[in-house]
Length: 233
Ligand SMILES: [Cu+2]
Image 1 (cartoon, rainbow, N blue to C red):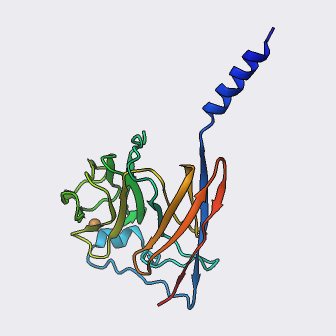
Image 2: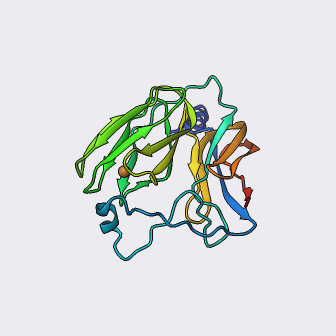
Image 3: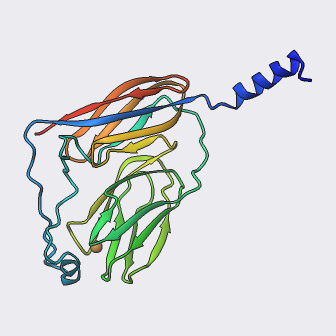
């Protein structure tokens, strides 16, 4: 028989096991004239050209989606988590060189989390990361299927990554002391999950259109909406 006291203990146990957190999700709207997609010229490397035979490759720098939203915006908690420690995620962050482009173009990871760099192309890539707070690295990957792991020792938004062989190849990495970030997708949406309850300042960053900030207050099991708008220049 379950006594009232044991019911109460069970209730407290269940309550304490529920994570005290919520989510933030939003859309990155784009206002103004839609810029024309910029074609990437790969003529300096015939192997890159061959991968894309018959197809145009467009730059990932400015991608305005069909629904007038902006892709590849990095949204993260800029203020409100100071002094808090978060465990490393179990998975590695990944960047792939595929079709002589970086996949993904923008990614987020934590300080000291392994970043797996993959060459999926039958050509030589040279990945060159240019952080200001952590040591730079510069590695040649001549063989298809080659994988190398690297880390960044200090937080930094954003770190430029480029290829020293192919001047059109560029990516951006946001390195944080916490796992609360998202990147806008092909419909302009992003989500930041399981953020501890509290008040935060979010920053949305785009490589061409700069940054925007917004305050949010996250309650238990909330999903707060944080929509940003960038304008064409
Ligand atoms: Cu390359």
